[in-house]
Length: 380
Image 1 (cartoon, rainbow, N blue to C red):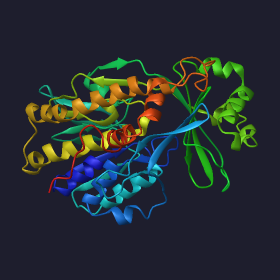
Image 2: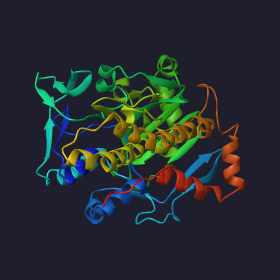
Image 3: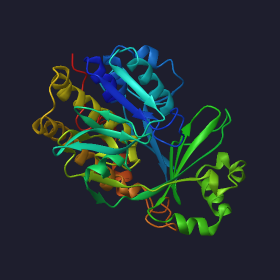
């Protein structure tokens, strides 16, 4: 959506395909980081954007072993919004779609999914939709997520790394007097997002441990959640059906080559991220901005992007992707238990000890999480 908006802003004819009728999908990234907020400010829309319902997090505090440590502090960032905004992703997408609709060269086709690629003379020339409609294009941008159909049809194979966790998403009612830490470590790790009248909860477990947890039964999961968030103990029994628990199998991978003639993959289609740090959607937005900045002028002239143009996008964004994935798989790995029986309150990870001993690290981490390894800016 961001890539389509920015290209249409340059006068490029754009068609964005959305396979659903709307954007109302729960249990996905809701963090709008300072880097993305700054981009919206550069577009002149930040006041309007912040009128949407959201909560602000100026710092990330982690509780382990009964002690709080500030893991990332955004207060020193030289941006207009030095905080993470928690906003439902459907609101973000509706906002961007509304802004994009103001450009006459932009079209959004809902209930339309790309299922096949059109290839002519060794070059991708468009897509075929699930309704059998051909959509021809000088450039196809695959931004269809970690299970990308476009990527698969193009024969682009990712290299995978071993992620440290899986995530169970669910929700419980919220009360005004609730005091629940954003991140609580123990037997598993619980991330709590305030959605006003309910908590959106992410329970992180060791990779491939879901079957073992499910075999232990819902009461075992209820007790684990209650031990991490005692304020919710009187409500955990409402989690009474596994259908209410959404299992996200975390994968971390990266394409060796993000493109082939006529096609470019960005976001999770090019590099699936772990949920750790909430950086995935914001890294994808940075990809979109770089794509529009580098390829927009080519497309606006009516030219077809050459292979060298696509290489420039990958070259600009690949290092930031590698650094971020190394951060997720390395530095943050110790925040999550390795086995279901592990209790991180009994063994405090070295990184937690380092942040407790060296408070200035919180500002460095705030810059890395908040702005990314290579923040992009809107081209004039």
